[in-house]
Length: 341
Image 1 (cartoon, one colour):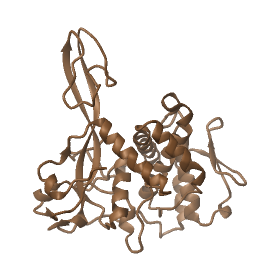
Image 2 (cartoon, one colour):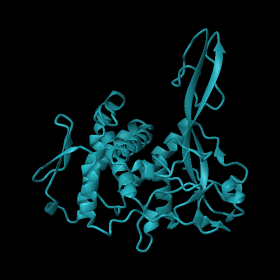
Image 3 (tube, one colour):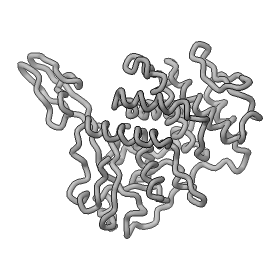
């Protein structure tokens, strides 16, 4: 990525990068982390800093979504930030605060759109990625007179509250706690609200699309209740691929890489879901056999990670809505820099 310093961000918050450049930059960063054996969607975790392991928050307190969660978790882990809130340069200044000179920000992304009438041929729309034209986001559409539109990625720069002087302390809700009951009991109660069938398998955890059922080893087979819950979350995300739930199919676009992209989606979804439910971060299983396939899929299509992250968010939204927890999430509609991922 190409993070921006505080001084430069004063001149502009919204990056002028094209969609292609943004997705390529994000993809390259994720691949680099995976090649080092690092799973970039694992929340930062340090003793005494529980808040940093939960979802990152916008200036208005709404949680970030999709790929932006991963980008901000990565930055927080790399820099040791403990605060959950992130602000653009202008948002900080509007609050009477100031980003410290020389601080490096992190780009987050959102979708913009453009619509323009055209006559006697396709007309490029200002701000679209190269090749994109009205009427066909892929480019090259022809026609006499019609109206079309296209969506394109944009990016802007945000800074963690730890990088900003003069901010008033903000009351941040801690991650959800299950201290009143055992973590496993709380998670089991949540799972039962989903109406997803589960069976016991002696040594494998998986979701069977043909039978629409999750198979899980016995609780005693896991090193901890948290590990069981994290694994079950992973399989729950897989289960949302069914057409009568969130519905998704990566095969048409990704072909032989579809399985790897679906696994990335389930990993991301389990991480997002764990943050919502107050689970500690942790490895679901040994990823050494998977990382090579994930890297290959991302190298074959620079959009794969972005799409997996977006679909993971859709899956988590479905699971939270089904369990009656979606209403507890602070909506982000009031935020003028709302991102769609």
